[in-house]
Each structure stands twice: as C-alpha cells, then as structure tokens.
Image (cartoon, rainbow, N blue to C red; front, side, top):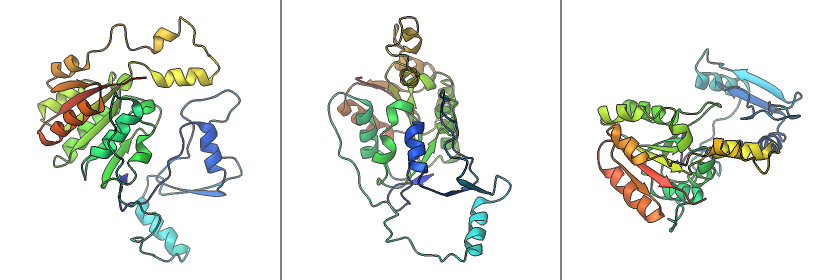
Length: 284
C-alpha cells in the first residue's frame, strides 16, 4: 500500500475485535475489491470471528479473477460516479513528520523515531506486532513510501518479505520493522540478504517476549498468568544475541538501547550499501 504525504488517509481496522466491530458497525454495505471479509486475529469465546454483522451487505468484485482497478472503474461507470481531482482533498495526507524523541527506547519511541527518519520512497515491511501499534498513525504524513504488512495470522513473513522487496526494487531502501519472536521463524533469510548484498535494514524490536500471546492470555481471563505458562512467553534466560546471529549470516549488526543510538545506527545504514540489522532493546 502506498502511504505518506499526498496519498489517501486510510483508516486502519483496529486489532482488537471490540474496537473493530465498533468502527465497522457504522456502515451498511462493504465493497471488497480483491480483498476478503475481515476477521479477528484470534478466536474468542462467545464472540464471532467475523467482524461484520449478517445484515451488513457484502459486494465482492474482482475476487482475484480480474484486475481490481478495472473492476472499480467499471463500478464507477455503472454508478455514473464523477471523477474529482483529490489534490486539495482533506482525504489526502498533508506532509508532517513527528519530532525525534530521546532517551531509553520504548515501543512507541521506536515507531516515532522510524517515522521521523525514514527516507522518501522507502519500502517498509512491518511485522512488529505489539511493538508497532503506533507506527501506522505516526507515519501517515511522512514522505511517500510503500507499506507491506502481515495479512493473516501466520508470523515470520517480515524478513523474507523484505528480502523479496529488495530484490524487486534494488534502488530503494527497504526497512523491516520486525518483532523478535516472529523473526526467529525465518532468520535464515538474512543470509540471502548478505549473499545478494541487498539494501535491507532489519529493525529487531527486542522486547524479549511473545508479548502478543501474553496480551491474549490476559484478554482470555488468565490473569495473573501462572508460573508454568509465563516462561513459555519469555524470550530471555538466556537473552537471544541478535548481533551474533546476524553476523553469523553475514549481516553487520549492532544493538541500540536509546533513541540516540538507534538514530545514529539507522542513519549509517541508510547511506551504507548492503544489509544491516539493528537490535532495538526495549524498556518495558
């Protein structure tokens, strides 16, 4: 999806199903162009997985069998819709960057720092999960860029997706905002980045936990989490050494504990050819 200044402001469907259904309940009908009906990320007891109610109308066009843009143009013609230039429209994002924060890294500071520093025409692959909740809104008005995100419930797509993006667009900077637990599923793609000398900067959000599972356990009523289950969501003891793992695959790496360290390492990565990995050690 193309995002940033000059592109449409597209509201993101919230992660939690209660918030998502509240947002979507205000609409009578939905047109899906090459997309599927939204469902919740997890299943919940006594709560439907589908985010739309039975009485909300669904219209599916394209469905992967034709060009969705052509289908939308045909729909506009059928409705006799007028074509209106959007250059001055409030539907488009105006240019703005958040200020650079400072101090110890937190999840929100990581998102704010990336939005403040990412270059124009970058490709951002976001598989940050709980660490990146604030990035989408913070980056709405930055210089234009392409955003690739997780589209289902499986995890581990971030590093290989960034690898593919860099192969497809070697002239662009590819930035992978990556959760640490998810990264462990496909870490070997770093070797391909090194072998092909790809311009990918991997930002490991190192909260050293499967925090998404912890959040969902709490939502399911398991609070406090028991002494047997708690270690299953812990990625410490021992801490994963992301710098050594990355270097073992041939990708230069460093750790950052503060915004200042992150900013310096990120700025270097944006001007030095080839892949880089920055472990962002988060203060919880």
